[in-house]
Image (tube, one colour):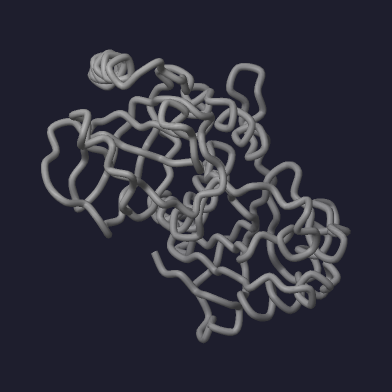
Length: 307
């Protein structure tokens, strides 16, 4: 997958671009349905499948106080878009001047003249341009003017839930990891660097990797069965998120105990995928009580991950 940072970096015409536009935070099943249509149509016309997205998130520029916590880092989102098998991602730098474009100018100057788009596919609730004045109907009208087709992808529902980034934020923040996984089509994951912690895990027989992450949405405080990818290898494990109340509390930490791992991970990048919430965070009367519970957590995690 080719990543183009900034519209001005698009130095040559893409062959028959079939494009979707959006923030794609979470890259959930709703987004994936749009990507599948884009890829299908690009292949049908011998074209290029393109996702047009923004960095940073528009609300972080326009109304930072209302900006949602994001489910993905930029790196994480790009990796998921690549897994989706898109050919090109155009990542526009979102500024106030970019936001001030009226919808007609965006359609003419960016979609038509710069990209030369052939077909555009958007979600059912898409809006664009200054003040989100551009609607799907107006985009279809502009498509007729500038020579591109517009298609709308209906919402994806899991049971009665319409899949959305906002629903996912709520589920994950409340520790409902398995429900979130159904809407994502995969386990929710965070990524970061393994850093030094208090080294208490080594003293009680469960050495942990402490993760420093830029991810803005963390699962609720508690203990989780996880997969961890680090150094080109995948491990099973248990992750604890919280303030370590048994040890007089402190800042929020993410500690991961990897089954069967021996070695030094400091400075390495790790991705942690949350499979099942085992329990909430607890304060134990003493270290021995904590160790007994960790052993139970490990056993339960092994059973959950084996399934």
